[in-house]
Amino acid sequence: MASNQTVNIYGSLPSRLAVEGATQHKRNIFGLNFPLGQRQENGGYFQKIAGVELIKDAVKQLLKTDRGERVMLPKFGCNLRKFLFQQLDETTFEEIKEEIRYSFSHYIVGAKILKLSVYPTGPTGPGLGNSLMVQLNLGLVEDDLTVFDVEVQVS
Image (cartoon, rainbow, N blue to C red; front, side, top):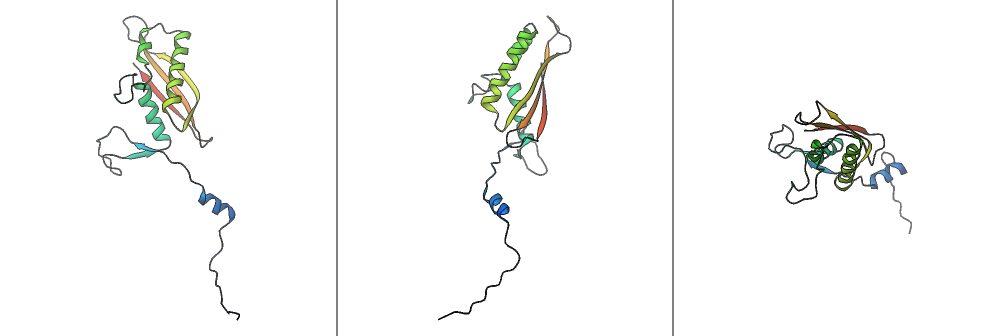
């Protein structure tokens, strides 16, 4: 017995590229927007952020935190304040860069350092209060075209 069934196709079939793109899962990383507790119009008290803004906030927190300052993460941080009272020469700047690279590789996910610059700001010397400016040029690991800068002043 032959059946007389009619099949109607509406629209068009998706292309192979669209089907493969739909099956790939992009890994999104989300975090909290700091400082907590500020009433944001769109996100409430616990607004989440992702992408470049998340990485910028994470890098600023990492650079401004001393090791041992966080209770549950005692190795988190960069100890940059200890360099403020040392002689600011090439050796000290290289030690600062190594400290930043070490902490960055352990605690920042989704970004890579393209350029790292450290230089003194303001008057330097005994009793004048040294301060440092750290400039990072970063790129996203998953997207080679996204490049952004982060500046942090340590005083």
